[in-house]
Length: 264
Image 1 (cartoon, rainbow, N blue to C red):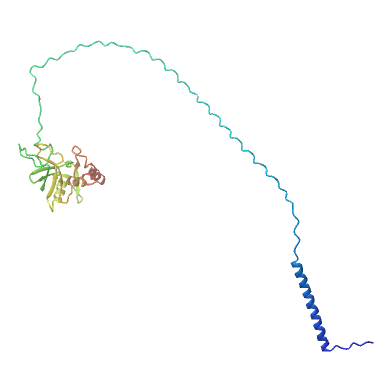
Image 2: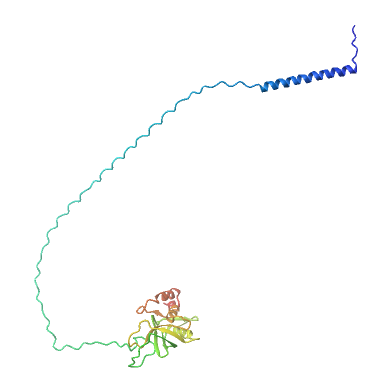
């Protein structure tokens, strides 16, 4: 019977070192072999023969079809006009001409001469004296005094406001909720305009020779047209026989129901 003597510690250490060295060498050999395989050049791929197919030529564009000619319009001749019958001639017998003998004793012509020295009919201002021939000036100024709804006296000149007419006697107005006569209210409004200053500037648009009543446009001390003021208050009417300048102001007063237009 063979007995195996136990190894000493020195032999066991030597055996371990030998095993470790063999393992390290094996690992190095593997790494070297892998490195060599990685650096070896790969074989070039085999060339692939490409077949080139020639492109087909483009198809020719189709030729445009010429448009068909439009059919010629059919001209229909109008039907012939019917022939008119010939006109008949009618002979008219001539009539005798009778002469009127002149009158032996004709009456004198009845004519009335116009007197421009007198005020027109319906003028409510101060009448000039009989036989006065003084003409109204073209432009004048002075202290005014109310004589009627649309008339004044400027100094010694009677003035009728140009382009306006007084209210009718039957027109009604209203003062502080109380019905009153429009003519009296118009006079009152004019007098109130002259409360601070009675000075007015007047201009006669169309003076006539020998006309003593001045149909004038008058402005008060504040430059307010007195005729336009009365129309705006509804206390006068536009006189279209003289001018159309105040028709617009009358229309505004009528729309707003001022003065006499409240009861018309």
